[in-house]
Length: 382
Image (tube, rainbow, N blue to C red):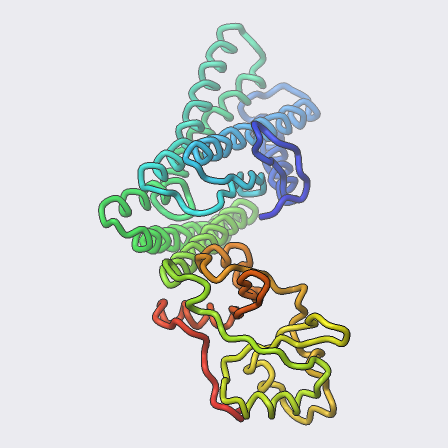
Protein backbone atom coordinates (compact mmCIF):
# COMPACT_ATOMS: atom_id res chain seq x y z
CA UNK A 1 0.00 0.00 0.00
CA UNK A 2 1.40 3.39 -1.05
CA UNK A 3 0.37 6.88 -0.05
CA UNK A 4 -2.22 8.47 -2.30
CA UNK A 5 -2.27 11.66 -0.22
CA UNK A 6 0.49 12.72 2.17
CA UNK A 7 -1.02 14.22 5.33
CA UNK A 8 2.20 15.50 6.84
CA UNK A 9 4.50 14.45 9.68
CA UNK A 10 3.90 13.57 13.31
CA UNK A 11 7.05 13.85 15.43
CA UNK A 12 9.05 13.49 12.23
CA UNK A 13 7.20 10.40 10.96
CA UNK A 14 5.57 10.84 7.51
CA UNK A 15 1.88 9.94 7.53
CA UNK A 16 -0.23 9.36 4.45
CA UNK A 17 -3.46 7.73 3.36
CA UNK A 18 -4.23 5.31 0.56
CA UNK A 19 -7.30 5.80 -1.64
CA UNK A 20 -8.78 2.55 -0.28
CA UNK A 21 -9.25 4.27 3.08
CA UNK A 22 -12.29 6.10 1.68
CA UNK A 23 -13.96 2.76 1.01
CA UNK A 24 -13.60 1.48 4.56
CA UNK A 25 -14.72 4.81 6.06
CA UNK A 26 -17.88 4.70 3.96
CA UNK A 27 -18.50 1.04 4.86
CA UNK A 28 -18.02 1.61 8.59
CA UNK A 29 -19.95 4.86 8.71
CA UNK A 30 -22.81 3.46 6.62
CA UNK A 31 -22.98 0.21 8.59
CA UNK A 32 -23.09 2.02 11.93
CA UNK A 33 -25.63 4.59 10.72
CA UNK A 34 -27.95 2.07 9.06
CA UNK A 35 -27.75 -0.89 11.44
CA UNK A 36 -25.90 -0.56 14.74
CA UNK A 37 -26.82 2.91 16.00
CA UNK A 38 -30.58 2.84 15.19
CA UNK A 39 -30.87 -0.51 17.03
CA UNK A 40 -28.87 0.53 20.12
CA UNK A 41 -29.89 4.19 20.30
CA UNK A 42 -33.34 4.61 18.71
CA UNK A 43 -35.16 7.91 18.33
CA UNK A 44 -32.66 9.97 16.36
CA UNK A 45 -32.92 11.24 12.81
CA UNK A 46 -31.15 9.59 9.90
CA UNK A 47 -28.81 12.59 9.47
CA UNK A 48 -27.72 12.33 13.11
CA UNK A 49 -26.87 8.66 12.65
CA UNK A 50 -24.85 9.47 9.54
CA UNK A 51 -22.87 12.25 11.23
CA UNK A 52 -22.09 10.20 14.32
CA UNK A 53 -21.26 7.17 12.15
CA UNK A 54 -18.79 9.22 10.13
CA UNK A 55 -17.21 10.74 13.26
CA UNK A 56 -16.93 7.29 14.83
CA UNK A 57 -15.19 5.89 11.74
CA UNK A 58 -12.72 8.79 11.76
CA UNK A 59 -12.11 8.31 15.50
CA UNK A 60 -11.35 4.64 14.86
CA UNK A 61 -8.77 5.64 12.25
CA UNK A 62 -7.21 8.03 14.77
CA UNK A 63 -6.89 5.11 17.20
CA UNK A 64 -5.28 3.01 14.46
CA UNK A 65 -2.84 5.87 13.81
CA UNK A 66 -1.88 5.89 17.50
CA UNK A 67 -1.27 2.14 17.25
CA UNK A 68 1.05 2.61 14.28
CA UNK A 69 2.84 5.59 15.84
CA UNK A 70 3.69 3.31 18.76
CA UNK A 71 5.43 0.92 16.35
CA UNK A 72 7.23 3.83 14.68
CA UNK A 73 8.52 5.47 17.87
CA UNK A 74 9.80 2.21 19.37
CA UNK A 75 11.49 1.34 16.05
CA UNK A 76 13.27 4.70 16.01
CA UNK A 77 14.42 4.23 19.60
CA UNK A 78 15.87 0.90 18.45
CA UNK A 79 17.97 2.74 15.86
CA UNK A 80 15.88 1.78 12.84
CA UNK A 81 14.74 4.07 10.03
CA UNK A 82 10.98 4.62 9.81
CA UNK A 83 9.98 5.44 6.24
CA UNK A 84 6.40 6.34 7.10
CA UNK A 85 2.89 5.25 8.03
CA UNK A 86 0.13 4.57 5.53
CA UNK A 87 -3.53 4.31 6.55
CA UNK A 88 -5.62 2.17 4.19
CA UNK A 89 -8.62 -0.12 4.06
CA UNK A 90 -6.99 -2.74 6.31
CA UNK A 91 -5.99 -0.23 8.98
CA UNK A 92 -2.42 0.95 9.05
CA UNK A 93 1.06 -0.11 7.99
CA UNK A 94 4.30 1.23 9.45
CA UNK A 95 7.13 0.96 6.94
CA UNK A 96 10.40 0.24 8.74
CA UNK A 97 13.66 -0.11 6.80
CA UNK A 98 15.74 -3.16 7.59
CA UNK A 99 15.31 -5.85 10.21
CA UNK A 100 15.11 -5.67 13.97
CA UNK A 101 18.57 -5.88 15.57
CA UNK A 102 17.50 -8.38 18.26
CA UNK A 103 14.52 -10.47 19.44
CA UNK A 104 14.00 -8.17 22.44
CA UNK A 105 13.80 -5.08 20.24
CA UNK A 106 11.39 -6.85 17.90
CA UNK A 107 9.22 -7.87 20.85
CA UNK A 108 9.05 -4.25 21.97
CA UNK A 109 8.18 -2.97 18.50
CA UNK A 110 5.48 -5.59 18.00
CA UNK A 111 3.96 -5.46 21.46
CA UNK A 112 3.54 -1.71 21.75
CA UNK A 113 0.78 -1.55 19.12
CA UNK A 114 -1.71 -3.90 20.84
CA UNK A 115 -0.87 -2.31 24.20
CA UNK A 116 -1.87 1.10 22.83
CA UNK A 117 -5.08 -0.34 21.37
CA UNK A 118 -5.95 -1.91 24.73
CA UNK A 119 -5.21 1.39 26.50
CA UNK A 120 -7.36 3.37 24.06
CA UNK A 121 -10.21 0.87 24.42
CA UNK A 122 -10.19 0.96 28.23
CA UNK A 123 -9.86 4.75 28.24
CA UNK A 124 -12.88 5.09 25.94
CA UNK A 125 -14.86 2.73 28.14
CA UNK A 126 -14.01 5.01 31.06
CA UNK A 127 -15.20 8.04 29.07
CA UNK A 128 -18.39 6.11 28.27
CA UNK A 129 -18.96 5.51 31.98
CA UNK A 130 -18.58 9.23 32.63
CA UNK A 131 -21.02 9.96 29.80
CA UNK A 132 -23.56 7.60 31.33
CA UNK A 133 -23.14 9.34 34.70
CA UNK A 134 -23.58 12.74 33.05
CA UNK A 135 -26.77 11.50 31.32
CA UNK A 136 -25.50 12.32 27.84
CA UNK A 137 -27.51 11.20 24.85
CA UNK A 138 -27.73 7.48 24.14
CA UNK A 139 -26.24 7.95 20.65
CA UNK A 140 -22.98 9.39 22.05
CA UNK A 141 -22.84 6.65 24.68
CA UNK A 142 -23.38 3.98 22.03
CA UNK A 143 -20.65 5.41 19.80
CA UNK A 144 -18.17 5.56 22.71
CA UNK A 145 -19.00 1.99 23.69
CA UNK A 146 -18.57 0.74 20.14
CA UNK A 147 -15.20 2.48 19.81
CA UNK A 148 -14.02 1.02 23.12
CA UNK A 149 -15.03 -2.51 22.21
CA UNK A 150 -13.65 -2.41 18.66
CA UNK A 151 -10.25 -1.18 19.90
CA UNK A 152 -10.03 -4.08 22.34
CA UNK A 153 -11.18 -6.52 19.63
CA UNK A 154 -8.56 -5.18 17.21
CA UNK A 155 -5.88 -5.53 19.89
CA UNK A 156 -6.87 -9.15 20.51
CA UNK A 157 -7.02 -9.91 16.78
CA UNK A 158 -3.59 -8.36 16.28
CA UNK A 159 -2.18 -10.67 18.95
CA UNK A 160 -3.01 -13.80 16.92
CA UNK A 161 0.42 -15.44 16.44
CA UNK A 162 0.59 -15.33 12.65
CA UNK A 163 2.24 -13.08 10.07
CA UNK A 164 1.70 -10.26 9.23
CA UNK A 165 -0.08 -9.42 12.50
CA UNK A 166 1.68 -8.05 15.57
CA UNK A 167 1.20 -11.44 17.22
CA UNK A 168 3.20 -12.93 14.37
CA UNK A 169 6.04 -10.52 15.15
CA UNK A 170 5.87 -11.52 18.80
CA UNK A 171 5.95 -15.20 17.82
CA UNK A 172 8.86 -14.48 15.48
CA UNK A 173 10.79 -12.80 18.31
CA UNK A 174 10.15 -15.80 20.56
CA UNK A 175 11.23 -18.42 18.02
CA UNK A 176 14.24 -16.30 17.07
CA UNK A 177 15.29 -15.99 20.72
CA UNK A 178 14.93 -19.74 21.35
CA UNK A 179 16.48 -21.05 18.11
CA UNK A 180 18.89 -18.17 17.37
CA UNK A 181 17.67 -18.50 13.78
CA UNK A 182 15.65 -15.51 12.61
CA UNK A 183 15.00 -17.02 9.18
CA UNK A 184 13.47 -20.20 10.61
CA UNK A 185 11.31 -17.98 12.79
CA UNK A 186 10.18 -15.98 9.74
CA UNK A 187 9.15 -19.09 7.83
CA UNK A 188 7.25 -20.46 10.85
CA UNK A 189 5.24 -17.27 11.35
CA UNK A 190 4.56 -17.04 7.62
CA UNK A 191 3.18 -20.58 7.62
CA UNK A 192 0.94 -19.64 10.55
CA UNK A 193 -0.25 -16.62 8.56
CA UNK A 194 -1.20 -18.81 5.60
CA UNK A 195 -3.26 -21.08 7.87
CA UNK A 196 -4.97 -18.09 9.50
CA UNK A 197 -5.74 -16.58 6.08
CA UNK A 198 -7.25 -19.84 4.84
CA UNK A 199 -9.51 -20.01 7.88
CA UNK A 200 -10.66 -16.40 7.43
CA UNK A 201 -11.33 -16.86 3.70
CA UNK A 202 -13.36 -20.01 4.36
CA UNK A 203 -15.36 -18.19 7.04
CA UNK A 204 -16.08 -15.35 4.62
CA UNK A 205 -17.22 -17.79 1.93
CA UNK A 206 -19.44 -19.55 4.48
CA UNK A 207 -21.07 -16.21 5.32
CA UNK A 208 -21.75 -15.58 1.63
CA UNK A 209 -23.06 -19.07 0.79
CA UNK A 210 -24.77 -20.23 3.97
CA UNK A 211 -25.91 -17.03 5.66
CA UNK A 212 -26.53 -15.04 2.46
CA UNK A 213 -24.47 -12.20 3.99
CA UNK A 214 -22.69 -11.08 0.86
CA UNK A 215 -21.19 -7.77 2.03
CA UNK A 216 -19.78 -8.94 5.37
CA UNK A 217 -18.66 -12.22 3.85
CA UNK A 218 -16.89 -10.44 1.01
CA UNK A 219 -15.10 -8.09 3.42
CA UNK A 220 -13.98 -11.02 5.56
CA UNK A 221 -12.77 -12.95 2.50
CA UNK A 222 -10.84 -9.89 1.23
CA UNK A 223 -9.23 -9.52 4.67
CA UNK A 224 -8.18 -13.17 4.48
CA UNK A 225 -6.77 -12.66 1.01
CA UNK A 226 -4.71 -9.69 2.23
CA UNK A 227 -3.31 -11.74 5.13
CA UNK A 228 -2.53 -14.60 2.73
CA UNK A 229 -0.70 -12.30 0.31
CA UNK A 230 1.25 -10.65 3.12
CA UNK A 231 2.20 -13.98 4.73
CA UNK A 232 3.41 -15.37 1.41
CA UNK A 233 5.40 -12.21 0.75
CA UNK A 234 7.08 -12.48 4.15
CA UNK A 235 7.93 -16.11 3.47
CA UNK A 236 9.45 -15.09 0.14
CA UNK A 237 11.45 -12.36 1.86
CA UNK A 238 12.73 -14.86 4.42
CA UNK A 239 13.90 -17.20 1.65
CA UNK A 240 15.62 -14.33 -0.18
CA UNK A 241 17.30 -12.99 2.95
CA UNK A 242 18.48 -16.44 3.99
CA UNK A 243 20.04 -17.02 0.56
CA UNK A 244 21.73 -13.63 0.24
CA UNK A 245 22.68 -12.94 3.85
CA UNK A 246 26.43 -12.50 4.30
CA UNK A 247 27.20 -12.14 0.60
CA UNK A 248 28.88 -9.03 -0.82
CA UNK A 249 28.25 -7.60 -4.28
CA UNK A 250 31.66 -8.59 -5.63
CA UNK A 251 30.94 -12.26 -4.87
CA UNK A 252 28.08 -12.45 -7.38
CA UNK A 253 28.95 -9.80 -9.95
CA UNK A 254 29.64 -10.66 -13.57
CA UNK A 255 32.59 -9.32 -15.56
CA UNK A 256 31.87 -6.39 -17.85
CA UNK A 257 33.31 -5.51 -21.22
CA UNK A 258 32.79 -2.63 -23.62
CA UNK A 259 31.33 -2.99 -27.10
CA UNK A 260 30.05 -0.53 -29.72
CA UNK A 261 26.34 -0.04 -29.21
CA UNK A 262 25.76 0.59 -32.87
CA UNK A 263 26.83 -2.92 -33.89
CA UNK A 264 24.12 -5.21 -35.29
CA UNK A 265 22.97 -7.93 -32.92
CA UNK A 266 24.34 -10.73 -35.09
CA UNK A 267 27.81 -9.21 -35.17
CA UNK A 268 28.02 -8.70 -31.41
CA UNK A 269 26.53 -12.15 -30.84
CA UNK A 270 29.25 -13.69 -32.99
CA UNK A 271 31.90 -11.69 -31.20
CA UNK A 272 30.36 -12.61 -27.83
CA UNK A 273 30.31 -16.32 -28.71
CA UNK A 274 33.92 -16.25 -29.85
CA UNK A 275 35.13 -14.80 -26.54
CA UNK A 276 33.94 -17.89 -24.64
CA UNK A 277 33.00 -15.70 -21.67
CA UNK A 278 29.27 -16.33 -21.60
CA UNK A 279 28.68 -14.54 -18.30
CA UNK A 280 29.94 -11.21 -19.62
CA UNK A 281 27.77 -8.11 -19.43
CA UNK A 282 28.34 -5.71 -22.28
CA UNK A 283 28.54 -1.96 -21.73
CA UNK A 284 27.44 -0.47 -25.02
CA UNK A 285 29.38 2.57 -26.15
CA UNK A 286 27.70 5.51 -27.81
CA UNK A 287 29.07 7.86 -30.45
CA UNK A 288 30.92 10.72 -28.81
CA UNK A 289 31.81 8.83 -25.63
CA UNK A 290 30.01 7.32 -22.68
CA UNK A 291 27.65 4.36 -22.58
CA UNK A 292 24.11 4.02 -23.83
CA UNK A 293 23.04 0.67 -22.40
CA UNK A 294 23.77 -2.64 -20.75
CA UNK A 295 23.06 -6.08 -22.20
CA UNK A 296 23.89 -9.57 -21.01
CA UNK A 297 25.01 -12.45 -23.16
CA UNK A 298 21.86 -14.45 -22.42
CA UNK A 299 19.61 -11.57 -23.43
CA UNK A 300 21.57 -11.08 -26.61
CA UNK A 301 21.51 -14.72 -27.66
CA UNK A 302 17.88 -15.16 -26.69
CA UNK A 303 16.75 -12.81 -29.46
CA UNK A 304 15.38 -15.06 -32.21
CA UNK A 305 16.68 -14.48 -35.75
CA UNK A 306 16.30 -13.03 -38.27
CA UNK A 307 17.86 -9.91 -36.76
CA UNK A 308 17.62 -7.89 -39.98
CA UNK A 309 20.23 -5.34 -38.94
CA UNK A 310 18.76 -4.82 -35.46
CA UNK A 311 21.17 -2.66 -33.46
CA UNK A 312 22.42 -3.92 -30.13
CA UNK A 313 21.61 -0.71 -28.28
CA UNK A 314 17.99 -1.18 -29.33
CA UNK A 315 17.65 -4.31 -27.15
CA UNK A 316 19.74 -3.13 -24.17
CA UNK A 317 18.74 -1.78 -20.77
CA UNK A 318 19.41 1.98 -20.76
CA UNK A 319 22.27 2.97 -18.47
CA UNK A 320 19.98 5.48 -16.73
CA UNK A 321 17.72 2.60 -15.66
CA UNK A 322 20.58 0.81 -13.90
CA UNK A 323 21.52 1.27 -10.25
CA UNK A 324 25.05 1.56 -8.85
CA UNK A 325 26.77 -0.17 -5.92
CA UNK A 326 30.21 -0.64 -4.49
CA UNK A 327 31.86 -4.07 -4.71
CA UNK A 328 31.95 -4.53 -0.93
CA UNK A 329 28.35 -3.55 -0.23
CA UNK A 330 26.12 -6.29 1.26
CA UNK A 331 23.98 -7.91 -1.40
CA UNK A 332 20.88 -7.49 0.77
CA UNK A 333 21.46 -3.74 0.88
CA UNK A 334 21.30 -3.34 -2.90
CA UNK A 335 18.31 -5.68 -3.03
CA UNK A 336 16.40 -3.33 -0.73
CA UNK A 337 17.22 -0.41 -3.02
CA UNK A 338 16.37 -2.09 -6.30
CA UNK A 339 13.75 -4.65 -5.21
CA UNK A 340 15.70 -7.09 -7.39
CA UNK A 341 14.30 -5.54 -10.59
CA UNK A 342 17.22 -3.43 -11.81
CA UNK A 343 20.59 -4.08 -13.32
CA UNK A 344 23.22 -3.05 -10.77
CA UNK A 345 26.54 -1.71 -12.08
CA UNK A 346 29.39 -2.32 -9.66
CA UNK A 347 31.58 0.77 -9.46
CA UNK A 348 35.00 0.93 -7.80
CA UNK A 349 36.23 4.51 -7.81
CA UNK A 350 35.72 5.77 -11.35
CA UNK A 351 35.68 2.31 -12.94
CA UNK A 352 32.77 -0.01 -13.63
CA UNK A 353 34.16 -3.39 -12.59
CA UNK A 354 31.13 -5.64 -12.81
CA UNK A 355 27.37 -6.01 -12.94
CA UNK A 356 24.67 -7.87 -11.03
CA UNK A 357 21.55 -8.90 -12.95
CA UNK A 358 18.10 -9.71 -11.57
CA UNK A 359 18.33 -13.17 -13.18
CA UNK A 360 21.49 -13.83 -11.15
CA UNK A 361 19.74 -12.94 -7.90
CA UNK A 362 16.82 -15.20 -8.79
CA UNK A 363 19.19 -18.08 -9.51
CA UNK A 364 21.02 -17.45 -6.26
CA UNK A 365 17.80 -17.55 -4.26
CA UNK A 366 16.64 -20.75 -6.00
CA UNK A 367 19.97 -22.38 -5.17
CA UNK A 368 19.72 -21.35 -1.54
CA UNK A 369 22.76 -19.09 -1.75
CA UNK A 370 25.12 -21.83 -2.93
CA UNK A 371 25.89 -20.08 -6.24
CA UNK A 372 28.53 -17.36 -6.03
CA UNK A 373 29.00 -16.31 -9.68
CA UNK A 374 26.76 -15.41 -12.57
CA UNK A 375 25.15 -18.19 -14.58
CA UNK A 376 27.00 -19.59 -17.58
CA UNK A 377 25.69 -20.28 -21.06
CA UNK A 378 27.32 -22.45 -23.68
CA UNK A 379 28.72 -20.20 -26.45
CA UNK A 380 26.65 -20.16 -29.57
CA UNK A 381 23.43 -21.46 -27.99
CA UNK A 382 20.14 -19.72 -28.56
